[in-house]
Amino acid sequence: MDEKMVDALNSQLNAELYSSYLYLSMGSYFESEDMSGFANWMRVQAQEELMHSMKIYDYIIQRGDRVILNRIESPPTEWESALEAFEHVYSHEQKVTGLINQLVNLAISLGDHATNNFLQWFVAEQVEEEESSSGVLKKVKMANDSLSGILMLDNELAQRVFNPPAPKE
Ligand SMILES: [Fe+2]
Ligand SMILES: [Fe+2]
Image (cartoon, rainbow, N blue to C red; front, top):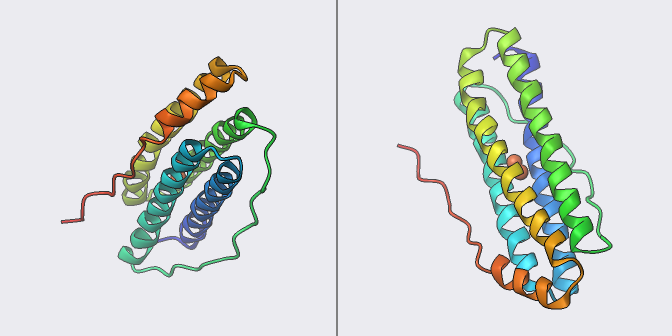
């Protein structure tokens, strides 16, 4: 691949690892607040982000290029409330969507159709990521500081499970 494309994919790999770190940090925050369902949602989300980073890791290698791992930024550790945390999740996912779009723009400008095709999985994934995070955000807003509402939502979020991707053929 063009060196610019390899560098940009390596940066995205780092961004996905950061996302995983961010959600693990939010999970730890929720554990400390005894909100184990919210913590579970974050744990699953962190696993998804790790899966995203491995998808990029594998793709760079598949193209015969070199994965370079850089330092991962420290995530925040405290949030005011579930509302603030989920506002952060949603805005973070919107930011990631912007990064993916920039990668697609670069692939197109380089005429790298294979990478553009690879990235389309992430384009679709970001639609789901924004939908799921804004969905939980809406529910947190509806619970509106009512303890019973938050407890009900905590029970609901406890149900989320990680679905590992199907093995590659
Ligand atoms: Fe991701
Ligand atoms: Fe994400």
